[in-house]
Length: 214
View 1: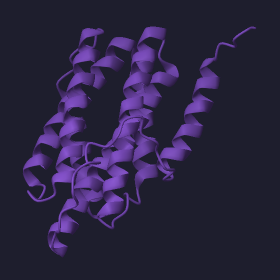
View 2: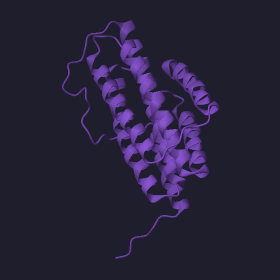
View 3: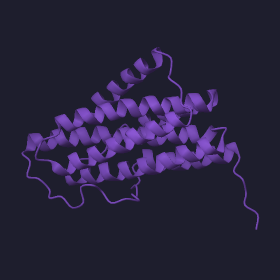
View 4: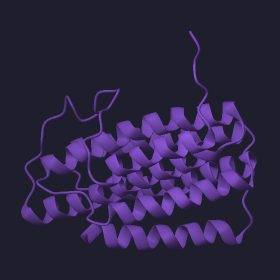
């Protein structure tokens, strides 16, 4: 039996198919049970429920962006080991996507209507970073996960105390993101030039502000 090796074009086409599923709201399947699975659903007043849903919508959109970033990087990564590492991290991000979608359903809410836009922009950023070089690509992972870890910490402070299910999901996601960043650093990720993290934070602020409402 011969196993066909995917070309760069093949990988891009695979990622386009994945993009359509993620961006258009196809149900993600988690490989791990949700951290919220064994916790009781809280009784929240309407304002607290809307606030929790807004934060979890932001987190869901962040996972859409993470899928796109990793997929864009993996599609054009030059090194097989780097590609494998990116795809492994993307698999865990799929768990996060599914967990956040479950919480939005439980909170009687929905994902961001602009997810196709967020996905497209993040995929392009990931592909450009990978085209520059694998160390730069991994550096984007390091910086992205650093910023995501911080923003999840903020959400743990802002989520209603009674919403233990959302809080459990966010805490587990934060631990995974820290591990992804550390792995990318160990694999050779470099520090990005000073303007780049600032631009990433600005873009993230726009996404979080809009996704909370839309």
